[in-house]
Length: 443
Image (tube, rainbow, N blue to C red):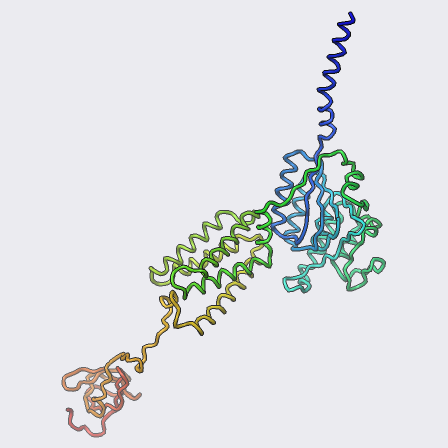
């Protein structure tokens, strides 16, 4: 009997030992994804967040925490990120650990909850153009509406979101008089319910949100995603395209395929690589680009220039298609073309005689008399000779002299057929006559 009891107790102990790790695993079964939102908000960031959200969803995560520290960025990218957040079924928490300015504030407002560190700020979300000036009234109005909608999405008072984007809103209590944009400190954001609370650390954030027992999975940009974010930056894109344009222009007077051509090809390769990794371009854009290159090469062997024109349009179209914003890409292409044209003018002015490939396209030499070229025999021996018109001159026609038919023009007046004329000027193939006062002898 005692042996039986001992065996039962031993079995229970054995089962308990096996079950303990399983219980412990079950206690920490929930997963939370920690995703950084840093630097400028642009299309490359959207691609990274899209991957992170997909991983979190596939892993059955309980929540996603966006750790935000950004000065803002581009509204089209921010809008895509906001849609990504709205479409997700996961709980999304925005943790502003430093700054959530402009597009960063817009992203934070689309989160289910917002928490801030004690030194963090959020706001200042006016739209500006590429030159740093306030955007058009139409663009500004649309952005203000988007900010208000973002605030209302989670039950926040829209006036503060409006004041972040519209300098005409007067909120002097928070240093936002007319002409100023609203920027809230952590305590102010909590006061106006734009923050659920202020935390001292990420660990405290997990505690106040009830996620302290969750497994924290941090996602970071891969090397290729970092490169893609840099390459797709709206400032870098026109620089890359300009380098490509200048490289091909320089290659025109370099024999063979040298440094300039390599520089141009590398710039275009980086451009398409970055946009492919960022998910902004598909392989169809590369195929279209390659078709354009083939047509331009074919232009050197085909007449009429049609292949070159179509090829150029195909290349420009592929570049515009590769970007998420066709208007911005078109502007970038125009900038690159302008720089390439300026480079072409400078090169032709200072190095025109040395051009290699361009000499096959543009005639660089003049065929003047001083260089020994003669376009036609200058028959000066005909000056003063008298001939007879074999056709009427209206004012061009023909004369007959010593049995030779010669094309001539009159000085402007009509001369009938069979009239004696005198040759008064010879300019190469142009022979000028006038009606002869005296018939004279036709020699």
